[in-house]
Length: 79
Image (cartoon, rainbow, N blue to C red; front, side, top):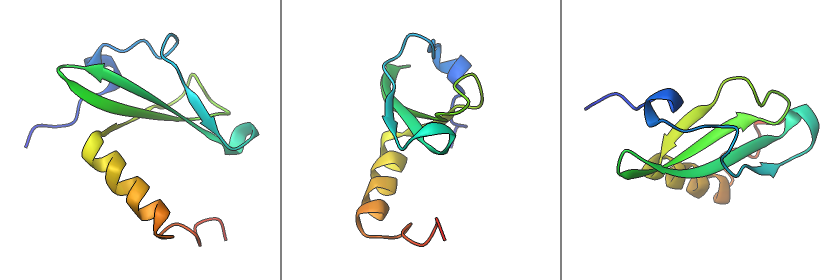
């Protein structure tokens, strides 16, 4: 299996993509949905550090995360 590409390898400008926020202040996250290298990707970053690290997820990983969130797999993560 090939390694997942970085934001740089995707050729995505994180300043110009449309970010959607969840949560408030530095505790929140933002996600952006992009198409690059012939595929769909989801980018995630901390609201409090937009110039910081950006995580890259393929659609399968993102769908699995959403499924887990809907089923309550992360409900105790904030405790």
